[in-house]
Image (tube, rainbow, N blue to C red; front, side, top):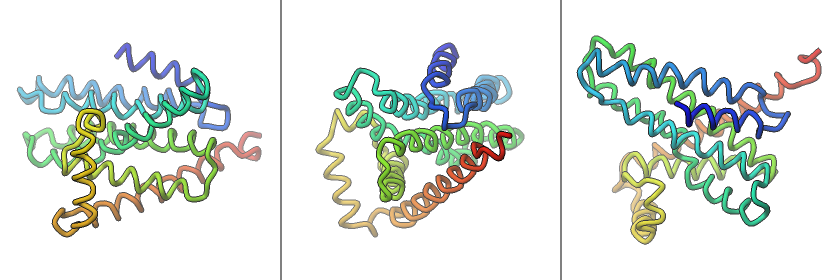
Length: 228
């Protein structure tokens, strides 16, 4: 919890004035009940099935941290490239928490599924905030029209590799050749890797549309007429 507070404090300083001012506070407010529910759940169900969601939360916040570092050019140009690479590598971890809803039917007990839904929604909500905010920060430094479609597609691919192939970000360092081999096989034989095509298409569109909606809402909130 102390780590989360430290991160939120840094982000509240690092975000530029054109971003939503309360991003850090919003993340903290949404994440805290979700974390509390993972800690309370073992008391109600005698299982710690969702404790790992707190680690997923940490991984989901990292892209926002790296994006803020890149945007603020922390450490100079050399480190700015490093922050960008780390941002891309960890970016799928943010919306990945959406896919954790698949566990809700298996974990149980049914009597607290409603609580699990609230808990998982909280984590997924934070994940999407981190994805949208970090993409927005990087987009301000890139400003290429193809950036959002490309980064949404890369994120969708990363989500598939994480959820179905079970690769994680660390595997890019520990077994890069295996990742390349698997990715090539997936793209060359997509029908052998269900539901690759449907999964990628749905998440690609979902992420792009989410960003457009977020961008329009951001513009509405920050427009001079709404500040008067």
